[in-house]
Image (cartoon, rainbow, N blue to C red; front, side, top):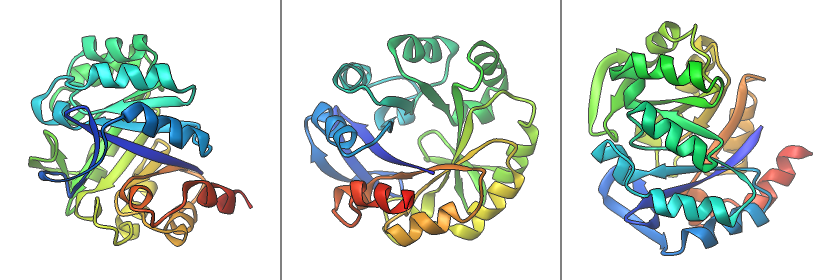
Amino acid sequence: MLVIPAIDLKDGRCVRLCQGDMAAETIYSDDVREVARKWEQSGASLIHVVDLNGAVDGEPKNLPHIQSILKSVGASIQVGGGIRSLGTVRQYLNAGVSRVVLGTAALTNRTLLDEACREFPKRVLLGLDARDGRVAVKGWTAVSEVKAIDLLKELAGCSIGAVIYTDIARDGMLNGPNLSALKEIVASSPFPVIASGGITSLEDLRAVRSLGPKIEGAIVGKALYDGKLDYQGAVEALSE
């Protein structure tokens, strides 16, 4: 199981939010390249980058900073936030991003998801962000009536690389992942699953991994930045 460090970008800086609240930010660094290099030097082969401004505005807002990350590290970069057109998908993947995450568009624009998966099979990830089991959209500013597990079943025929499941209530709160919801997602998903939200400790990572071989990885953010989890130590412990 991959341990995937997250870099959340807001106004060009590395921040963390609590439950996706844009007003509840903690700024960790003004130099996102340095942050990316730090995670790569600690052993990360994949880094998860989110354009928070883009997620709310519906179009890329931190592209120059993402391009600078791409030039600074050799690790694979996956990007989400504000990817709502095939042109944006192409822009990111042609710039050197390894995979893109579609969240809102997967629910509101199925044609885009289908076209992106056809053109870039397995390089499109489904960002499944849920509150009380229902899919959230537009940078988590709205919650739909669609259940996460129902959306997964609908998308079974798509060439999606993996699904990133985030329980919004746990995100940035450092109180552990929602394992029961994650277990349900793993059982329902036709795709590999990446866990996100609330992962704080080595015990959390082991609990996520215990959900089975369908778990591809776990995204960790605030716990790393607050020093509650040592990245290198976690990777080494999980490989034992």
